[in-house]
Image (cartoon, rainbow, N blue to C red; front, top):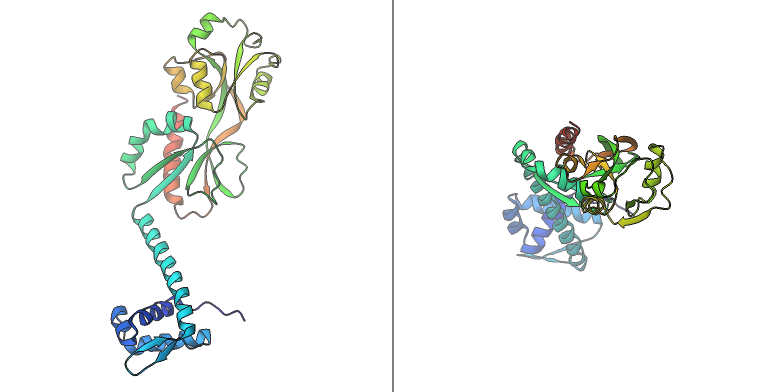
Length: 296
């Protein structure tokens, strides 16, 4: 028959008495009276409807039921103490684990990280880079920067910035392969990113361009690799504002057209009802300011 769980303080008294083989010694370790320990043990036995101790003249010994239940009590209290200590540590030493794609980390967050640390010296920020979509239920991550349509109903979603696409290439590539008309790219090598194979078709539709099906393709496995390939003069890639801003400002790449807004945006997401929400919003507000600066 199902019974409610006993109060945790009864397990503490039981474990202490089992360890000391004495209600009196258990009382001394818990800073309560022996009668209080005896009463709590009695309450636990009544709750379980079984005898946990053999009461001898000068000591107590566990019954067979008591020996079995001691394992339950020890495992329960160990888990409780470890989780409690972990929680107190996190509250006393706040840590934020933020996941993002490598390019966002390298171009937006890390270059300005010293500023965030000076504004929030009490927060330990841990940057984790990944090109995969983070599963908040299975991975120990507090927040993530995502690119998409913002439809993640199980998460709290905050817009970081809109996204604009622009065709980019290295200055040397443009010099060696003159582009007379941005709407006519036939004969040029187009750099694709694996998993986003339809991006070129959609981008040329935004530009009212012609088909790109017969162009030479160079496929890279992530955004950073695609930009590096373009920088090395291997072809034309699709750059995204605000990520690509610094590369254009420093002349590593040149823009071949005016930026075009696309439906997807960049978002900052985290679990609903996170107890770190205030810290996460501090990071989000700082990140939004850094991202907006890339448009200026």
